[in-house]
Length: 455
Length: 140
Image (cartoon, rainbow over all chains, first blue to last red; front, side, top):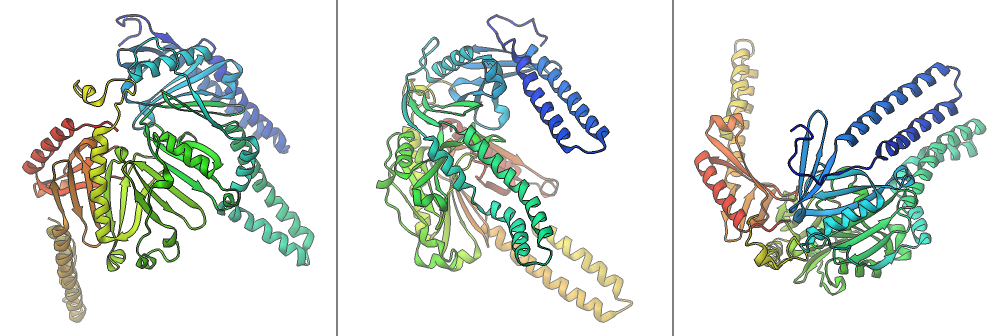
């Protein structure tokens, strides 16, 4: 398929500034490497030069690759499909079915933002390869293309303006910073701090106090650096986290230097998890993560965040809204039988599960608390598992399988008979909910009519 | 099939060891034979239990798969959720004329496989499942 011999016109190209953006990005990396080498102030400057030289050459190679990729990439919106042709040696032509789109994201890394550029990323279910990345487009062009893709995917057709949105909430800066700082205190940091702190205590009472203190401070510095870096990344990354609701689904916008704007159409949220780390409990804060079939792979950790921090009531209300008006508080929860203590000694008391006619809810965690929610129409399969020790106590665990992501749903250590009832009820409810579920094209005809066509 | 495989895996070394040791030290050879024989009987029983634990049922809306004697699992996979049906036969399975059928949904954790079907049965099951899946397809 040689370029230029295509049928039809109307292909879009990436913006001319794309190579410049890549150059700025790579220059930043080379500059950082050079600065690091200079800061070493070693006698063997040859090594330093050699390292910087290698990084520079690598950067040039990457730049050349990006320039070629920019020159040969073209895209077009076709009937029901987004088509992206790319590749110089191995030509690749991707088609994304618009009714199967899981999310449409607009990303502006710092370098791109300085040039007024943006990356448009459209995902479908499956791996990272099932996503189309258009880097970079001019910001207005990217926004127009996003509106066009969402308009067509919703079933309204071509040439629809972007759907109006209703802001639901913004995370205040103070809450964000405080939550990130409190979030630092987890077991990983404790492990990192054990060495330096024990050094310090030894220094306080030891004979060679000064030397020990020096070593302790020396080993403390990298830990502090890592912590500072983590806080900086979290705070700038999640700055002004805004959640909004629109006919095209949930909209998330955040970022101070690099900004992201995610759109998750209705019915694409597979499952949700409210999590409350121990130190957040005095403040009543929780974070919310979600399973979305398009958000898999290396960026999963960033993508799947629905809310970094908010009071519990607000988060529950948001989850209810995201699922189309579900009240989590009204779902009756029951605990596993008392003998579950043989399988989960103390923490069995914190476990509880329950369901109503729309969602299944499970709660667990004695110190850090977690609540997971899955709507019946989104459960994939239902599983009962029972190991030998559990069978001795006539207990079994029910798993509701969801798509890949941070949320795992299970009702652990239930009575065997009850587990079987849960399984049957869930399978039945999931079946009924599936038949009643909204269409893939969320503004389109009802499911009965949509199913009449092929596919 | 597994009985034959396990039987061979345990039996051959035991017989070989006995044969090699018998001329040199008879009591040791007899001990090896005793332990090996015990292991063989145990494997026979365990594999039998495991084999009896496997089962599947095609219901109106979903497929039920049970397996495991010690760690028991029961999976319900709705036909509308099946993304892909795999028919797999490894080299040992092929030697016995057996195949397994694997079901995949959009969830990576769905573990639904049916082992030890004859290839005729497996083909028919796969076609039935594919047809049902198409009729009830429900997206994600």
